[in-house]
Image (cartoon, rainbow, N blue to C red; front, side, top):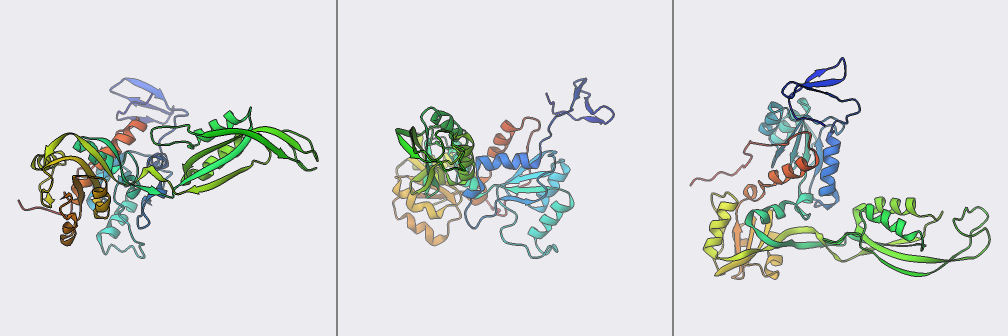
Length: 397
């Protein structure tokens, strides 16, 4: 067991002494948490392959093999955030927004991006960004907004297509359950709230081994007919290597017959925005008041209140104007997002209420989301929420 107390190292016997607990704990064989452990976990929650093409999520600065002292969680990374990390003995900053979007050709401190990177390197502070990949997954940024607003029956507003694959393979009937189990353990067969999904049918497989073969069934130069089970599973494309390795490792045959095909299906677990329902409809003005309180807002920019009552609400953290058509098509009464330009408000066209709550304000609670995820997985330290206000926009009220 590991207790999160200040400790005095005792190198003589490889132990730590915890004065408040009056207890000595032998750390022989205890595996310290590395930055790579944290980032690997985060990339299971929000795979990097789900980030948008313009994005730069992932490890920005630092050595993934370092042992984690503690984690500072922030929406953005600035010089002040790095200074806060150093002051709080955090050598890993997990941020939503990447500090580097474009390639850096020089590091001479000419702007805040270069100065921030230099400060992080000098102080051995690693910076990791989990951006549009966290926007695009169930349980991510938009689900956090939906939770703040008390939305029910939440689902992705605009699911992505062309990211699912289907695997078809064949195995002797007696061996098929073991192979399917390995595929499911590798992540295949997950459909929404259901896992271990597959389809199987029996048939006859034929083959003839040559002199160099080492067949599991049959003998060289003889045609063999085997009662086999054909099975198929679907999985996200980023898992292809893992799934195929599981198939080959679990399959009894020397040569495994299989084929993989791309699907155009929408993947309900990955996509932009979210939509859900209020448990009880609210008058439009009541909804604005609730929204202001729930998201801790100073101001809401909105279009005309063309809906008398609000029940179905679409949300998108950050700049979500590209989802307006999806929000209207889904029957949403209100679309909560940020970064709308003047002429874009006209696109509401009397069919929906647009609420622009500000970019920072729409995503700041992502810090809480990340803290919850990391704390549940890694119980040997407590990630710290940054107290630095990185919002570049101020309001005179």
